[in-house]
Length: 102
Image 1 (cartoon, rainbow, N blue to C red):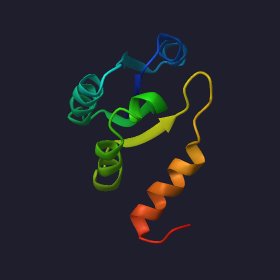
Image 2: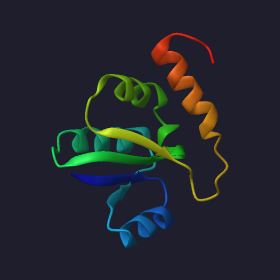
Image 3: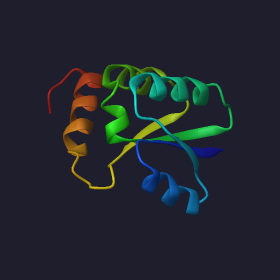
Image 4: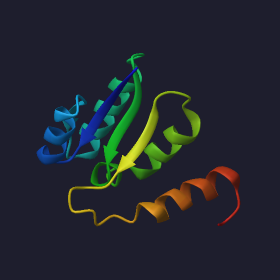
């Protein structure tokens, strides 16, 4: 089982490549969704890492995939500046999944 990265910048991609994780650069909603749908079909990929800015291009689609797909696990990682509020995003996903506001 492998990791795969969908990133909005080359710095993150290069860092992950040094750790042995392959990935692609995507800037638009269409690019992100095209790569994500392609990776979902690859049985060898267990975890997809996606930068916050990529997720912001299509948050509703990715949230739906996180809730419904058994594989791969989709994980949001902060952008290189670390300005995202991932904790709030996680709270929103949990609240939506269980139907209770945290």
